[in-house]
Amino acid sequence: MTKEIAIASGKGGTGKTFIASNLSFFLHDQGMKVVAVDADVEAPDLVLALGGIKKVIESSSFYGSQLPKVDYNKCIKCWRCIEACKFNALLKGENGPIVLHELCEGLGTCAIVCPVKAISFEEVKTGDLIIALSKEDIPVVMGELELGGENSGRLVYELRKRARTMQCDFIDIDSAPGIGCPVISSIVGVDVLIIVIEPTPQSLKGAFRLLEVAKSLDVRTYAILNKYDINPSFAREIEKSIDVDILGRIAYNDSVIEAYTSMVPLLKFKPESEIAWELRKIFKVILEEII
Ligand code: SF4
Ligand code: SF4
Picture 1 (cartoon, rainbow, N blue to C red):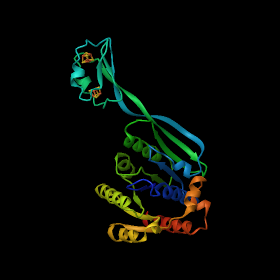
Picture 2: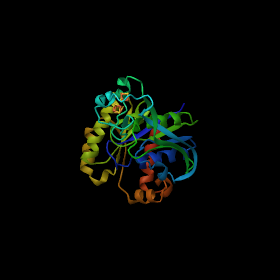
Picture 3: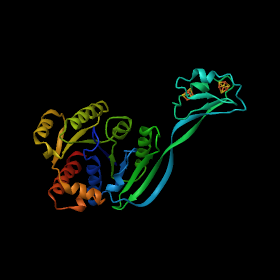
Picture 4: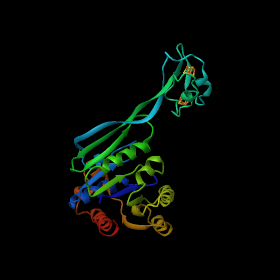
């Protein structure tokens, strides 16, 4: 049965994609079938951390919102829709109301009040769903929200749904940072959530908030302390204060940046480095004891 692991952090820049990409690489290297999901649909970069795109397997449009469309042949210019719209998203036009898409919330009050049913709704493309094979031969399911595109949570839901149709042992989800809608979509129903924390007050605060969300969703949660040596005393404080098992402590290392800019997972870039050994130790615990 496919197991789902989500890697998340309450704040960006803690090393979430670094952990997620190396976990995918590790599992693939162990002979497991892995599908990686990049749930950070506003800034997807997981495929880059896995070598870049070798080939696109599938690409489809994502329709994440609905906008009103006026049938001017039916409109009797009563302007009830304009009166009802609380977002000032309708303007009087020569033939009837003109919809200002950027202000429209799409909830449909205008259509309800229209006496002649002149307003209908049409789906609007707000992003793309792409499945690509990375150069490390790991399939990556990713989404790309258009500028100003809405409904990132639903796009993440679609990515996970698509990943579940692919035969695999593991789905490794690189969540969006923070605790917003796409993050909740990333972690709901996973087998294990791993929160990546760095020893800064901002990261710890984000981790606490994420932990609360995870508890409310009843998700089994662990943590990894990344770059712990940039502030060892605060790292010790985190260990004392956070109410989850910490799977490992990873030291800051310039090789992580070098691996990232070379678009090679660190486990391949510097397989004998101390940090690679620490990562493998953590991933073995996940594979053999947790999941
Ligand atoms: S859907 Fe709502 S926000 Fe958009 S035009 Fe109609 S009433 Fe206004
Ligand atoms: S409520 Fe209907 S009929 Fe009246 S102005 Fe709006 S679209 Fe036209």
